[in-house]
Length: 478
Image 1 (spheres, rainbow, N blue to C red):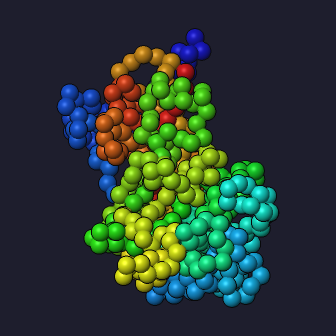
Image 2: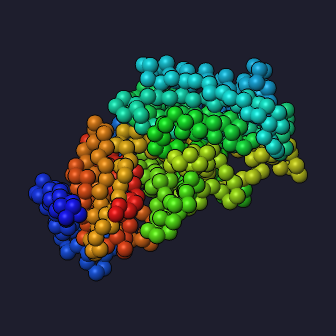
Image 3: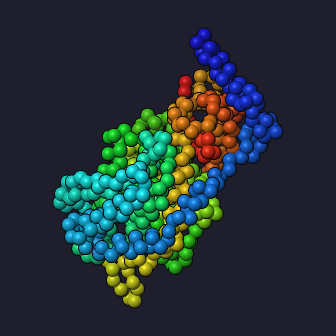
């Protein structure tokens, strides 16, 4: 009896999904002009096509402010510290990681001064005890963290980072030159330029711009940042690391100046055994929060204003390698890594030298500064679109209490003051991207005349400004 009352309540809610009081099945017919659940779906199924989110004038103005010359100056200044090895001097004012740390902190403070008090900058330090093989002695590791507080939903946080430590051929050599222009002054330059440009803006959510240390020795700085957020219960809805984003040139000399790779894991790093069992039962190996994040990046950052294509790579990182997004994945936060399209390993992790007439070493002369600026625009388009849209919907579920060939979705209403409503998206299980969208207004339930056995569903929030959130992939609700 209770189940029947619940079912009647659900059907009553579904009947009010649009201003015309259409059920979601009828709504899909109205949108497509063909019966929902047609035999050949593709572009003929319920809903309209999913379209990219085009940059509005405000975002275009932000992207125009990104300054290639400033980015180049940042990369060259960081490379000029000689080495930024995590084990190098903390106190030398000219050379070593301490000098780089202090310079980054001072530059971030300059950006914060233009924020009207909304941006704060801190040195986040801790002592890393010996951790073999790359931390032989107790070492202070310091992150430089600039936080631009959101104006309406500050509890929602988005993080962008680069690592400012560097290394040469020997990962324990803290004295030899290690300019680290590409790896990873380029990523730090992206984070610092975004901090400068966005400091004067008022995003709804909080954006964090971080330069972390200890990456080359074992992702220590990023791990400290991620665990600090987790311990505080911080709602980090996305994290991006920019690591090796300085060159468009491959080791064979070919160039790809309009593509950036984005590494996004499938099976979540933090997945529990129970979650793994559930995933095997319902699918979703290609629908982790990080994959939804990658789809979002492509929808907002592939356009004429960035001039870039985002090549999503379906793995956590490069083959047997890792970066600063991994500690965030370990804490259950959605995270992904930006990396240049093809690497030139003669200019990474190499002693500066000339060998058989060839220059080795990670020097600024091998960077492509217009390329780094375009990567910064991809990041800016992504972060601004995230921080000015509603948050990703929470507690999205598929009802499983009845066996039918349609699908009932339910979710929790968000608290964003600028929330306008929700959209249900779906795609064939073999499709890489969401292909169809059904608007459901401000309802928190929807019935779609498609079988959950045959397609994948998701739900995204829509703001009053028209911006969409990343998609939330549903779990079962019995």
